[in-house]
Amino acid sequence: MHRFSMRRFVGLVAATTVLVGTVGAGAGAQENIRIGVTFPVLDQFLQTVETGMQTKAAEIGGVELVVVSAEEDTTTQLGQVENFIVDEVDAIVIIPVDTDAAGPMTEAAQGANIPIVYVNRVPSDLPADGSVPYVGSDSLFAGTVEMEMLAELAGNEGNVVILVGDPANEAAVQRTQGCKNVIDQHEGLVLTKEQSGNWRRDEGLAIMENWIQSGDQIDIVCANNDEMALGAIEALRENDLLDSVIVGGVDATVDAIAAMDAGDLEVTVFQNADAQGGGGIQAAVELVNGEAVTGIQDNGWIDVPYEPVSPANVDDYRR
Image (cartoon, rainbow, N blue to C red; front, top):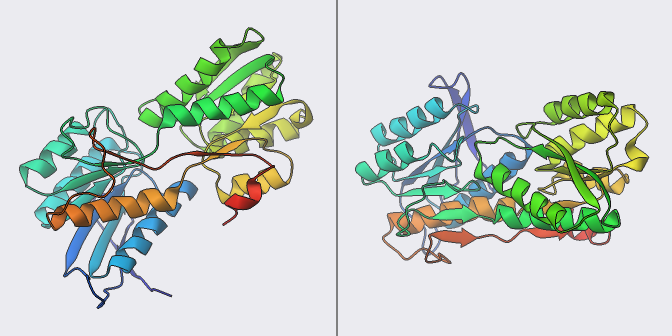
């Protein structure tokens, strides 16, 4: 088993973490590549992305990851990127807090001639020339396939509510749009409510409690991620409504799979966090070495496909 050293330091965030990939000595091992990685927050899903990064760094060998969390603050994240530049890292990998505000980070890194890679959340202004790779998945597909499965389970009829992630994130916008596109295709489906829960379980719970108190009938919950879906499930259970409402999410987290096993969550969509994280580090190392980026498309994307998960195939997604 590869081991990683960890220490805490005081910086732009009260407690951030440095994780260093084990240096390998095998053929093709890289020499002293330092990659700064900034996360918006380290929730259950993004911790899995981080694990994928660590695994890839250890696999390549000679790669050191400096991992920090911006705690959902755009200004903090920009400051972290600027600190990476001052520290003269070899590459920077970013999961942006706000996909509409990534431009200054891109400009700062490019101005310092430091390769930059985005992971999981695609910036709205990703350079069209492919010079800045994005490793992630098509969120419109995730929302579409989630709602298609929910609609089929409901017989294409019912009142639908949408739990939206952070509206500043491309993933929230696109997953919500995918859900709405399917609703629009069926006369029997009616969108009655939508609200941002910022990807958080506690906010999903609070929002669902408020919706229940309104007295309006809810038949289907299309949540942008599993965390908000799990919060909704808790609220529905507390109000003895879970048996009459179909709930879906996205990510296929460990907790979501457990909820599916319990019969509480009917639908989720697997987002390959390991592949996204590992792909981001692979792309960064290739850029540092002046190599062609593996799997990159003309638009700069390295696609990691989503996969629909239901009780019929849930065994394939246990971790």
